[in-house]
Length: 219
Image (cartoon, rainbow, N blue to C red; front, side, top):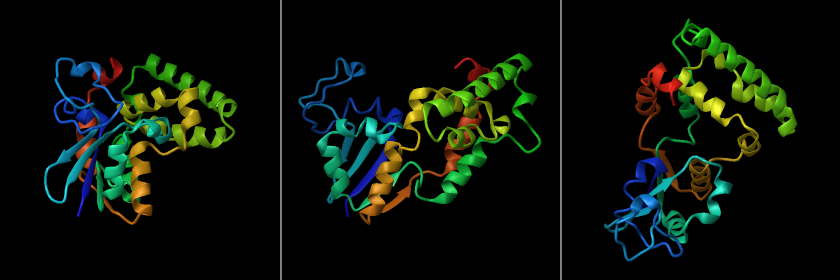
């Protein structure tokens, strides 16, 4: 049985310089300067075994923004794989429930308890501005505003930072289109492939929530 393992791009970006598979028309990124390879690079790795297994690095953006640029060898490996595994089990409802819990501060705590008062006020005013603008950017603005910014007062600073960075007209207009990882998981499921995750939410949640407030404020 053929396997394909998916990992986010940031986990592979330093490694793809060393073990590329053929991807015609693709050239090495700048950080691979000095690495000699007879073949163009792709984000697909092969494991020499029978049957073969693959590792494919992705990036968390709407799949429509990158799908046309994914090399054919990666798409072929996906098509031929019997099992596809992701960082997390993206087709399991409990995964997203766990992600939601991960983002929240401990019971009884609020964001205003730890953010400097002036910064909290700036954040509040910015979110109020964004909530007014979203209906101008997309027709489903009111729904998106509630979905994206809901319960923000109880979220941990790191997750609020990610939320704020996504609250712009371009990203809002892309909202609702599956990111590449989720798209591949949905596609694998529709093709009757076995899917799953190699990590659970806690393995990602604990280190992320260990980031200090000062680190978040300077990022």
